[in-house]
Length: 437
Image 1 (cartoon, rainbow, N blue to C red):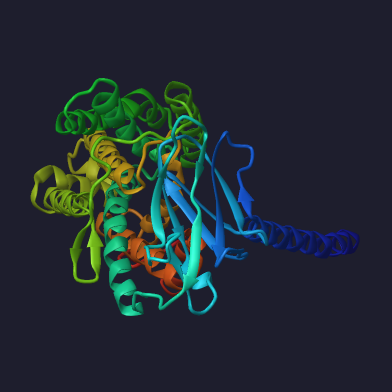
Image 2: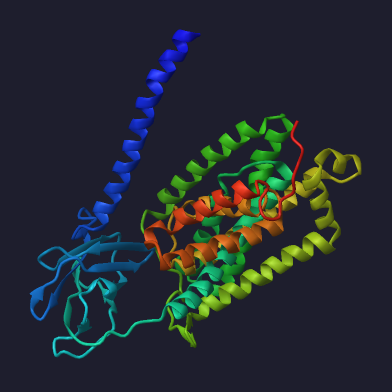
């Protein structure tokens, strides 16, 4: 025993040190790549430009590029040049961060007229797009911290509500079956891909494509339960093996999507539109519609759970499966309906997320899977209303945190707040304490 303990102590410290070195290296590596004068050099599609102040190159200026589901940031080199590789052609939004400019320097055109730091570029006949910035002396217009804070609140609320739809579905499934379904991300992606298929490939009216996509998403949940999860439950397979099966199913579906739809990001019709101004708040009509649909869907789920007989049976199964079965409730029927509802909510969440990003891609659901789990855990495992609260908290924190931390780290911040809350309240915000053992 003493020899074993000595060996353990001798290996523990070097392993911990090695792990810490790897973490630091990865962190510094990410920081270095973000501050270089070019990213994604291996991409065929390149957006390039120069930043000059009174004809002289200016280094260290932050440029961000977004569009078609892609976001990236780069700093100009000492020669004032920058380059960003993007996944495909189309329109992209270029923004120069004025806070990285020297004091008293603003964005102008070649004639010295002040212009906004944000612009759009579009690829033409070639796979290279240019966007040059000319700077000059002037007074910079800035947005107050309060206005930015209010804007972030509404943006975070919009994201939190669409996240809530997926989180509620996942929470209902966990509450009735105990399954941590990692393939829920692909159920989110399914709704967006179905809409893309009918609205773009088949050229159906968008409203018809949306209805069909939501119905098919519910049917997808039905098929998954009838073809996979119910047989596994009847065979008495444990929750851990079933969770591993869900991971394998997630990988299989994700790469099936990539095989069928390709690796590029495609846009749904109506994704572009002018923003509406409400004082300091700027929201697109799609943002307002997304928030309205999400609120109505959440209210519908609440009415189902609290006011309908089937909803009360769902809550009973979630509380105690054995007692619910002994009371005459058809547990399999309840679980089947929960899978249909969960699939439909996940599909609707995927559709709204496709407009929020914007764009549809084969792995879009996987990109927010950890946030969905974070929302469910933060709100309280197995509680649908807790999932809503947790999602809104995550959405708000993600957006508001970008006022202080880089946007690339906003998702990490959401997971940090999850850990902090669980340290104080392990059962989650609306979860209940349970005796273990």
